[in-house]
Length: 261
Image (tube, rainbow, N blue to C red; front, top):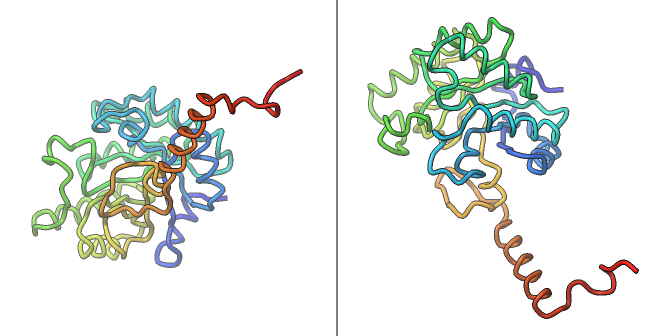
């Protein structure tokens, strides 16, 4: 059974595997693959709901998908993303929403941001809810960051990332996702904190890695530099649907095996 303590203990000893899942079938596959952590990311806005960012994702969306993932992976360690404006408005609202994600089936929550959210994180942890941090490129801040920009390239950015990482550790986070951070800075952050870092586009020296399920299996049509496609599920599914259409049009389906008498 995976716990936050086990995840922390894996730092520097064994790479941590995290992958997203958004529904019952992807959760079942992710769980059976042996990944230590399943992330129900607000990336479902892009991947499942067809938005151009994560910003439109609501708490209701997250709760529906966390429940579905829990049904697909009943024994997995599940982290639920806190969507835009679910924790920024007030500490009280943040604790309440984090609690709703746990009630829906998550074991922990993840929120974006650095030192400015230290007190929010402390209060969520104080309520008995494990928190995973998220630094670097933070999708909910895409409008402030000016697009999908790699972080840590300037001395100012590097210093802020290091300061934020230490602040998140001190606030009680059990792990930190580093997204689109240059490798040397990600390594420096990893070496400077006692909790695991999990990279996505942050190089080879993080304590673990996370990718989006649809990118891993090739269901996404987007090719990303920091991701790797291990199959071409999109093509397999497309071919299957085309064959189905052809058989219906040619009256090959249904055949004798598919009817009731």
